[in-house]
Image (cartoon, rainbow over the protein chains, first blue to last red):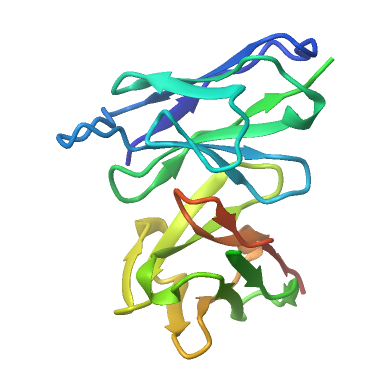
Amino acid sequence: DIVMTQGALPNPVPSGESASITCQSSKSLLHSNGKTYLNWYLQRPGQSPQLLIYWMSTRASGVSDRFSGSGSGTDFTLKISSVEAEDVGVYYCQQFLEYPFTFGSGTKLEIK
Amino acid sequence: QVKLLQSGAALVKPGASVKMSCKASGYTFTDYWVSWVKQSHGKSLEWIGEIYPNSGATNFNEKFKGKATLTVDKSTSTAYMELSRLTSEDSAIYYCTRLGAPYWGQGVMVTVSS
């Protein structure tokens, strides 16, 4: 199985500051078709996860442009340009290149 | 708009089975895979498997083969997951979702207890 490893944040992050969440995969997620098979989700407290980014860098519909995704085949970053109170929660990366689809362990964001 | 509406919480005894539902609306149910995801208390997300409603084709995480059974009812646009031989390790929230799209059910909390 592809293992997804997420980094931690130096919580709490001051409101208005930027935050970068890292994710590393045990195998390249770059397909021969040029697409990278990585999604990012946010799970707010008490809610279902919501999709933020798909194909590594494409924002989902309705997602603030403060969120951006980038990376290579195995190293990925979700950047929040100016954190707000509504960004609090746990962020997950997920690969869908191979079965079984796998998620990272999650990165918690707290705001000061 | 697209919605995935899941059935309510379940309290089940060890060794029993539970079947939960996920009713889709707002899109053509048969055109998209539906995945099921497990979230144990305070923990990360685990992909259980997926089903393609048009054909009934499934793909599973090996870990959940023999534990989870996925079916659909195309007439009601509803996906089902049945979990068998329940133990305390199966106590969790279970979500249905169209992975890679912004559509998740609200989750079903399953508690296994005598």
